[in-house]
Image 1: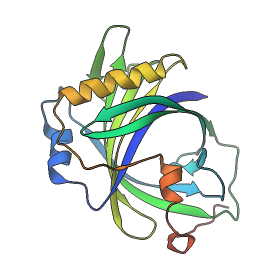
Image 2: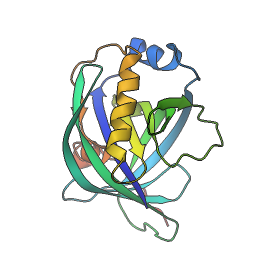
Image 3: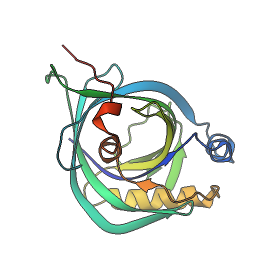
Image 4: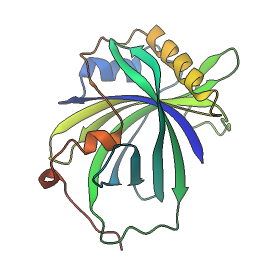
Length: 208
C-alpha cells in the first residue's frame, strides 16, 4: 500500500509553451525526464473516490480517496485542496469485458527528496530509495473525445502524518522557481476528470 497526498489541475487546449519551457529548461539542478504512454482507466458510475487503471504495459493499480483536507495549495496562481489517497498495485486482477478509457499522455516529471529540514530535487534516474518525497509532473493529454488537454500535478508519498507536509514543502520549492502564472484550472484527479466526458466520447477496450 502506498499513501499519497495530491493536487492536480486540468486545462483544455495544448500545453502552453512558456509553462512547458519553464518546467523543462528553467534553472533546475537536473533535467526533466519525459515519456509517452497510454494508460487505461476503468470507469464506473458513482463517486469519484475510486480509480482503477492499467498503467501502460504494467499491472493494475487500485486507488481510493481517504480524505480531502482543508489545506489549500497555491501554486502558479492556482489553488487546490490537498487530497489523501491510498494505492494498491496488483497483478492478480483481470479486467474482462470491462469498459476501459484510453488516455494518451506525454509527461515531463521531476522528483524531490523531502527530509526533516530540506526539500531537494534529485535525478529521476537515481537509484536512491526514497521513503519520503514528492513527484511533480506536467502532461500533454489526448482526451477520450480526441481533444487536447493538459495537466499539472504534485504527488507526495511517505507516512500518513507526513505526506501533506511533503507536498507543501515541494510546492514552496516549485513556487520559488517562478512559474508562469496560470488561469484557474479544473482542480481534481484523473477519475473525476475522465468522468466529465460523456460515455459516447470514451473509446473502449477489452482486456482478456
